[in-house]
Image (cartoon, rainbow over all chains, first blue to last red):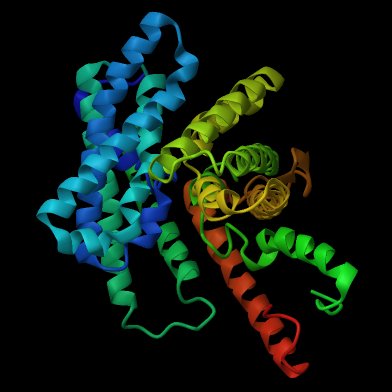
Length: 195
Length: 223
């Protein structure tokens, strides 16, 4: 067994089991918003923020659900809370940074259906993390997501300037980049084994 | 796609087929719209997982499509997304418990990804873009088409990855003991790489089809 200390949880969520590149969570924004670095980073940060909020809420909700033995409502309760959290972030961004709000466009409300967020809430429940561990797990996952999407955006900005055959252009190329990044991230597995 | 669409009795049938075929190829959820990628890549490391995931998603897609379509005049516009999500979550919970009852092995293999069907963008996308605007029959047919397209794409991806990565298909050994499996194919990078190559092939085929249609006089395809 791995010692579930906080550093390990953070590194595990951010690098070894990176949400995007190893667990395939949150691919839609990863592919959709990673065109430019200046939108990719805020998207990563917004997602991290929602992750943190929903992780906290999921922890509280789960405690209540377990207390009343109604765990079958978990999925519905989680998704409702996440939707509200996203709404909150959306309103905040719209008020304070309208430019960024427009740049993120449809992908902002779509954070609700970002599997990374729900996945995070579910995983922390399955792993029986306590309160502090949950927060660290959420921070790690957010950091990992931001790192992945920023790396991807940097690569794609460079690729825009290079000559690529027509059939490969677009999604196929991004996907291949994702594969290479994922391959690179597998190198981190040596840090402490898989989950 | 064949025959002429103007003919009277044939027209309705043809349109039903069109509604179905839309999800199968032209608007294939995975290969064209790039939706639902997370489960696509995550559980496609073997053909059987891919098939199970495809069927589970299709079921949720069809069931929630039908309910959303039935309730479309009752749901207030402002809270529609939340309503859709609750409907979808209900069916996903159903599927989750059903799979757990039918096969525990499968349940463990798919893990959290069964519950994550909730956030599969294909389902919410269909509810919002199609089921909420069309009668039940059409909504179900469209959902079936999308589900089939999703399942087929997933199955193809899963089969390729399993054949290359473990030298077997649906658990049957294909190449005998001397085959050295390409382990990377069943690991995460393999998913990205195989899907990327599938997209290239898909684009090539579509380009050829487009060229062929143009040569044949430019009729038929567009619709």
